[in-house]
Amino acid sequence: MKHLAPYEVENAAEAFLPTAMTRNERLLRWADLLERHEGSVFALERIEHLSRQERRLVSHENSPMTVAFADPILRHDGLVGESLGDAMAFFDLSDGAAHDLFCDCHYHGTLTAKALASRLRALTIPSPFDLTRAYVGSVLSKVGDAFRRR
Image (cartoon, rainbow, N blue to C red; front, top):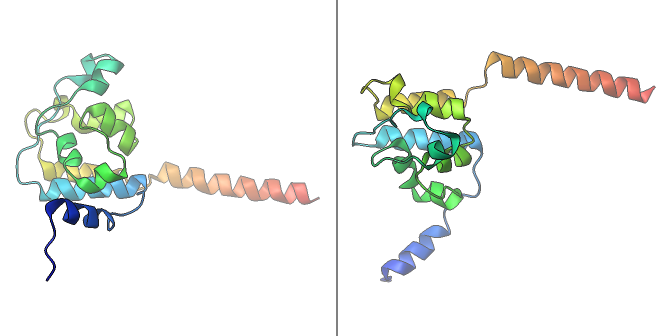
C-alpha cells in the first residue's frame, strides 16, 4: 500500500471530479446535499426589503447557500461563494425564485432542509407552459423550413 500526504490525496481526488454540470444537475445535487444535511438551515430575513445590490450580498451562517458552498463538487463546478448572489448566479435563479425559496416570509420559522430540497427538485421539472412553448416553437420552425424550401 502506498501512503500519500494529504495534499497528494486531494490532488488525486480532483481528477475524479465531474465536468461542468447542467443547471438541473446543479439543483439536484444541492437538493441531495440538503436532504443529507443534519443541521438546521435558516431562511434569509426580509430580503424583499433590500435593494438588488444588498440582496446579492446577503449571507447567513447555516443558510442553504452555506450547505451548497461546503460541497467541493459544486465549488469545482464554479460556485464561488455562499452569498445569495453567488447562488443566484451559479444556479441561474431569478430574484423572484430566490425570494420564494429563501426568504423567511414564506416559512415563518418552519424551513427544513428536506422541504427546501423538494422545492429545488421542483425547479428541474418543466412546466406545462415550457413544454407547450417548446412544441409550438418546433412546429413553427418546421413550417418555416417548409416555406423556405419552396
